[in-house]
Every structure is written in structure tokens, then in C-alpha cells.
Image (cartoon, rainbow over all chains, first blue to last red; front, top):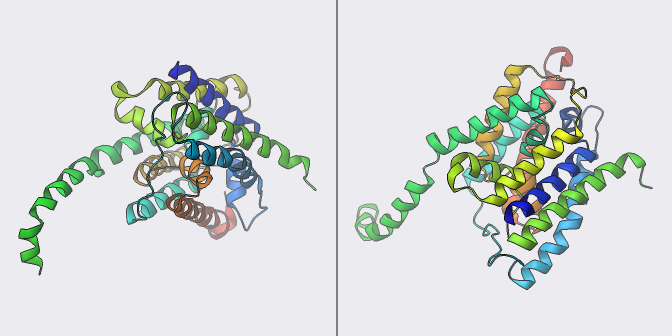
Length: 158
Length: 141
């Protein structure tokens, strides 16, 4: 059942990207090229998506829970940190270089070799971050431990 | 007046919004492509059915709707594509989201984090395109 819901959502999402022609990297680059012949169409995709989604987000938050699960798994509004900004910037550089963000890359990979190549290296990039750089798991453990150690470190610090 | 050129983007966007609504309303999940792909890549065995389904839906529509002959004029060399892909994968994991997760879903719930992330990746991407198109000699790309 959940697989089918995911499948339907993925198909709708993919259909939307294809109709909006966002699987064509030249459209993306055209949007990003403010100082060339600027193509504002990607902005209309965002506007269309947010206009439809935002009211439902509001209603669902008021309702408190989704229909077939127990909790709305919305990321908590945590602080804006260096990790968020640096990550977004790195993504932006890759997006500007290749003209593919993750959605269009997955959709177009089976048909366009450029998307397939980008998707494979994107997966490698994700893997690289998870394996080599992300020590979130360890860090959170350390944080929990450091809470206990605070009195001792506080002496050293202050 | 809304030119007909902007109708497909609006309709396509609306479908994306509908897709995000479907996932959130039924399963309470956010339609962030980088997060979904990232989770499946990081832990394939513990990935969930809806995540596999979502990726299958994306792949299937692409395969059905994009013709093989409809080859995109790759203005970008394979090397650039590989570097771009590595940065996209690494950056979206580090920044916890991409155009869909931050751009569509995050902005739809007025998240400040997502607004910052969206502005940052839009601006850096625009700077990269500006540099590659207008600063590199002759604007070869």
C-alpha cells in the first residue's frame, strides 16, 4: 500500500517535471543565466508547486496527523548553521555546472546519458558525504556524553 | 496576461505540489528527492516501501515519457557532469535537501531554514552559470 502511494506520488512528480520540461538541463541553465536570455519558467514551476502544496500543509498541520500514518514527519525548525549554508552552496555549484538537480536527474537517467552519468556521480557524492564526512551519529553521541562532562570541561574553559 | 509558454511550467509545478501533498497527507512524509534517494543509498535494506515506490515512479515516468531520440544537447562535457553530480550529491546530503525538499516543500511551510538554503543554492548556481557563460573567454558554453 505504502509502495503504491509512493509510486503514485513519484509518477505525479515525474510527470510534473516532464510537462514543465525541467528534465532538460538547458531550461535550468536558462533560468540560472540571469545575464543571458533569461528564461523565468523554472520560477513558474516553483510557484505552481508551492501554490498547490502550501494550503494543504497548513490544513494538515492544523489536523495534526496524516491520514495513513501517525505523525507528520516535518523537519523541526532548527537553527540555520554553517552546515546548511555550505551544503546548499556546494549543491548550487553542482546544479549550475550540470543543470541537473536530483529530481530531474532521476527522471531522465533512463533516457538521457548525461542524466545517467550525473545521477551515478550524485549517488557517489551522497555516499562520500555519508561515509567520509558525516559523523552526525558519532557527534550526537558525543554531544550526549559532553552534556554529562560539562562540569569538568566548564572548569577548564572558565 | 499569462503567456501560453508559462502554462506548462505552472501545470507541471502544480502536479509536483500535488505529489508532495499526497505524500504528506497520507504518509506524513516530505517529498524531498535528495533525501529519499540518499536514504535508499545509505541504507538500502532499511529503506521503506514508499521510498522505493517514489523512485520507481520517477524512473518509470521518465522512461515512458522521454524518448530515447529526445537526446538532450549536452552542452557540458562528461567530466563536468561527473564533478557536478558529486557536488550535487555531497551538497544535498550536507544541506539536508535540494530543490524539492527545501525549494518546494520547505518554502510551502514557510521554513526559514529552507528559505535560506533555497536562496543560497539559487545564488551560487547563478554565479556558476554567470562565470561559465560570461566570464570564460568567448562564453564557450
